Length: 402
Image (cartoon, rainbow, N blue to C red):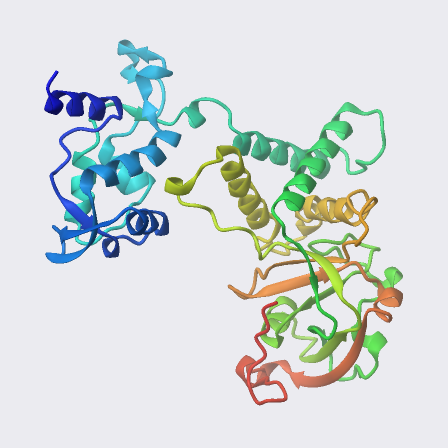
């Protein structure tokens, strides 16, 4: 067998075809996994796309690398999917190489000729995702999460008693969430001395000048449900900058309460939290070595989006908040039971101030007295609020991101 034929057969086995005899350097791609591959496997040569002598790899080597990632998630539909000519072909979603590269993976490269060369190098078969055809970890967890929300919203909210099969299944889902949180390394401590900001909207006559007036309320006064706490359970909601605290609190529609008091607190001790802002980035498919972990990361991202979505206060919010309230209760008690360093709260993306963080600590009015101290208090008329005017002692806006 000639070398050319052997090479062609090897490419066919990898679902590659008609790879151009070119070389390419790293600067044409945005995907870090691709650029790292080129930088680690280069030889000195000529880049056919920028016409310069640089560190390059052959386009064949590049395509073998790309196909390793693609083949992790896509393969020939004939390998696993049912086919019925009367129904129009394969009984599932299939893709052309063009659709995989441009629409699914969204490969970015300049000039666009590179993308076209990649597409032309992939065999024209009916590509499909086995993970859409069969259940995967992410799908299973998302199905369980949907089941969990439906159960506690409309059937049973008291999940921590034994015996009932639905309650047992719901508790299992919470334990899976707990395992995810532990495995992703998002439990950490925020240091003593961290600044926290809280706001309270009120009328002209109300005077707020004490710690008790603007800290978390007594449990008997916590009459409204919040994102992470039901009525009757007080928690310390806060933000790490004044703008976010205002946006998370103030309603300009409340005409009776035209004033807001803004408090700066300082933590008295190191505080352990679950930081949902520190999730690992969703990896490129070209760097995935552990598909289960990849799908777990996808799920926790979708979970956090669900937990922090904007909820309209139309009278139904007490139902929409239930699932996150139960997750909070799970982290606060069963998850914390055998932990040496107890979790005292959660940090999460603000639903009102994109790219900034809000926080909730499991402190009622009495407990908060031993956790934070009041260091500053301001009163402003809401119509005069200009978020950018709030500065720290150095004259700069407080935009703390722990």
